[in-house]
Image (cartoon, rainbow, N blue to C red; front, side, top):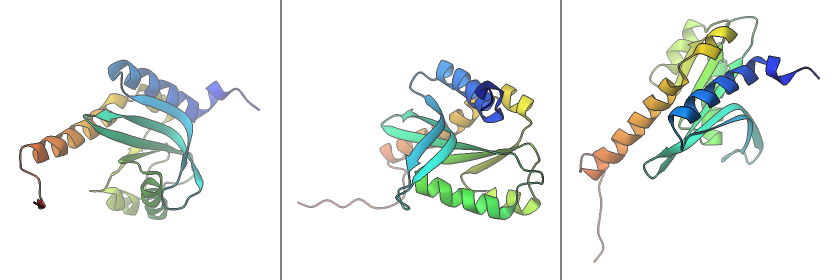
Length: 159
């Protein structure tokens, strides 16, 4: 078996872990994480798993690396969307050094999936805190909007 530090996924993990854990003490980054699927009941593998607290809420982000010859297609994005639901991730990031088809980009638009076309070098230099900050702000906004009475839905009381 080769040197794991030469594996592109390991380098991405190393960079994400160093940056996120330095900026957010409650944030943890795990490489090659195993999660039992909420729906499938089987163990699933995640390349990079980021977890932490936003107020009282736990946030989970799954990062997957796609090293394909061709661009990542819509079926891959559909499968990843289902994967995120199964592992209970709030957000997912697919990194592909070969890019994405227009269908894949359209499917990911307005969903919880971010598509990043990054080479290994770019992934090493990527601003990983931007991914966490975006999810942190969205969750923080949802939490405080409800705290101040701005959330949708109804609350009923039983006396």
